[in-house]
Image (cartoon, rainbow, N blue to C red; front, side):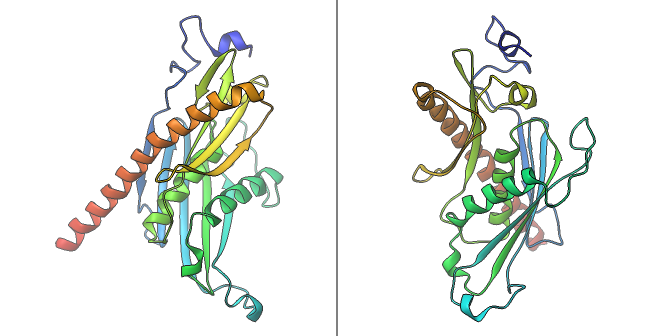
Length: 246
């Protein structure tokens, strides 16, 4: 697909959005009764389910690690039906391990791990449908599930992607836009309270003169996503309060 097809003369993208417009977001917490915390997150046609277990006793007991901060483990799986091309990935798949590592590193700085000594926190992420923005959806869904589990965190972690089409910064890339080789793809995650960067990851090259515009757009998207996540947490708390009152 050419650049001209990614952005119409009217300034609209392939899915009808304007350059600075997020895809539709739908999310909710406490979707799995078997987990300590869970969430379901949709951003456009990208759909993610997350389950959190812990803090709990580490599987491997090592006296040398007894006083260290809690260990965060992340497992990322992709459903074979997540894309139009059915493909079963092994647990050793490089892309799966890469996404899991990014998520783990992001939350090692956000979770107050010193509170949970001699323990581990397990995050299981399942990508049910993929239409771009996989990493941002995984981070946002994991944030919601960790809050639902009652894990002590410094702040929410909110992620969003942005890219550059022709001379226009675009927010929240969809699958078609990500697949275009000429579209740089930058994923930014922030902690909204103090604005600190929790994750910065780029899939392709972007000229340094364009970096500030793309980052500013992604950060603005993160702030809108923070509102969505906060509303989902409040909705889950209200549902719980209503159940306990009966």
